[in-house]
Image 1 (spheres, rainbow, N blue to C red):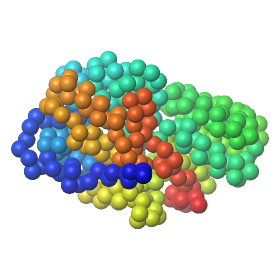
Image 2: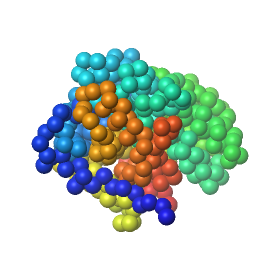
Image 3: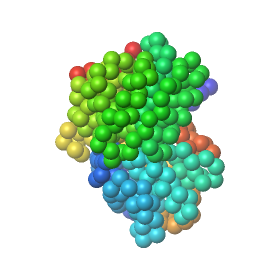
Image 4: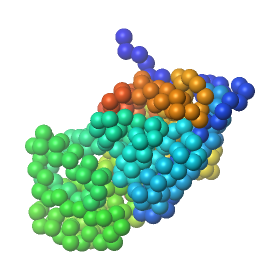
Length: 380
């Protein structure tokens, strides 16, 4: 009989509060609090702070959070990771806001034998990724759901436009694989840098192919550029995107140009529409309450909940880890506990990890939502 998902219960997490303090458990948190990826990075920080405010101790250890800004720069992200491990002696790394930065941190995590929980999708095959897991859904899983929606909507041809970096590559490769299986032809592959201010040339090329739909492989505020350009040129086809677009700044900048945009999301975004029997609903509603209390407003993005899930994953693993924080043996034991997590309910899905699997999500972690008058609505 399949085991029911284990919800990271308050009673388990709060156990350490009543115990005498042992050594602090140090969490090194890296996020893009400035630069072009800050629309993701700022919510990430709000999410982790809400989680720690709700549960300041794990397994008898007070949690010490050390936050560093990588300014949306992968090189800085890697340098920050090294500082946190070598100088601050953190037990675990959480971060960052973009795929290139997360890959830089993962390299440091592997070199210095420190577990990394990434809130952004990062694919590192083989031994190089042995110390990394991600609570974000894998791109193939999310893009496959979008392509399924395209097929149901009668799409025969789709044009791609995305970032000229690792995230863009992930999105494009995922689209190609799913589109081929669905009998949909990809007619364009246009790219742009996150810092670009115009994609007029790329969009003109896309429109010339007369695609039934356009799929953008991007994230955050810079992700609005293609949709703005398509609207300016009167494109009337269907528009799709990734789960990296669900944040308030993107909606504000995109405005009317993103009306009807369909993207994949974790269930947290529509938690109030889930049945009470769904364990994701209970955790998601607890997240909303913790976020409201910590930040003075309700969450309006899908990113802050990723770092909340990262903390739940850490909490569950810490409850199964022996030894004292601050030692190489503890970091190894913590990593082993993280990669053996089974049926842990979070806001974005039910997490199951294996030593050779960086992602813990399955089909339970995906819904499709549509932008309607500045709000994200569940697509039946």
